[in-house]
Image 1 (cartoon, chains in turn yellow, purple):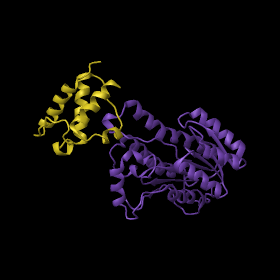
Image 2 (cartoon, helix red, strand yellow; image 1 turned 30 degrees about the vertical axis):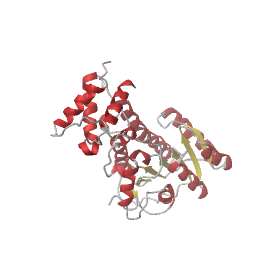
Image 3 (cartoon, chains in turn cyan, red; image 1 turned 60 degrees about the vertical axis):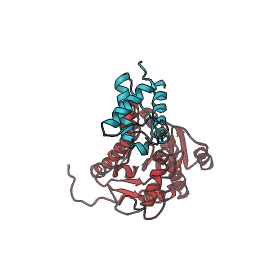
Image 4 (cartoon, helix red, strand yellow; image 1 turned 180 degrees about the vertical axis):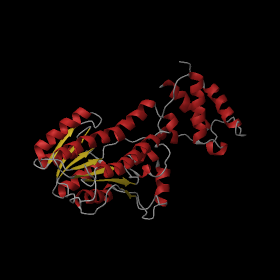
Length: 83
Length: 252
């Protein structure tokens, strides 16, 4: 299975935000509320990662609720690919 | 053959009730309550908890329990026969066994969707068919209570497949009530969210929001649902084909 790097996922996250006229900040510690990155944006990003890797990424909601920052999103998806 | 007009005799109160998913939470509360009311209860669950086992030990003449997966039709058939041998003919059924969900639909594995539907919709329909066939074949009248959910009537994120199954059971309740022509009373009880394991899926923020929007100011507790189930099994009410919501008016 192809696995996307954290940097590649960050690029995809930037694309998701750019499509909405938003900008992904450089600081991974930025709060997602400040970026305007919502749960459906997370879904879109996860599905884009799936498209790239060819593997479904399924997960429960509680893990999602712990995600607060840009870095959390990237960490979650990097980890999810390894499961 | 005629379906018309002669007055159908009343459906008597249930005396021997089968409860699926009776090992914890609402199911255990229903089993406990029905035993306290003097009924005989047969209950199964995937795992018989110490609490359920204790009830059976305390009331061996009135309570029969075993470990059965509700999706295992052959095992449920064996259980029903054994329960009737022990307690007498079943004339009440509470379809309570269910699995929850906690994932957005697009991120729910296809196998999990299939499992939710099999457990929450296919299995209770099969169990109902099994029990109704036995009751009809022996000329018995009886009562069925399907435990559904407010999710059957209102939308909540993360519960798409779960909601579909509960909505399906609400719909089946209405059609069964029609189909059984008054020989059996078929109703659903649709609780709001419990502050328990099923509701943990929503997260504290969503639960707090539901509490704020609930005129009674609290989430539903199993003890508040149990009397409604008992009423539908026992009382002469002429309620049939209904889904009774127990949620403190959160959903209105």
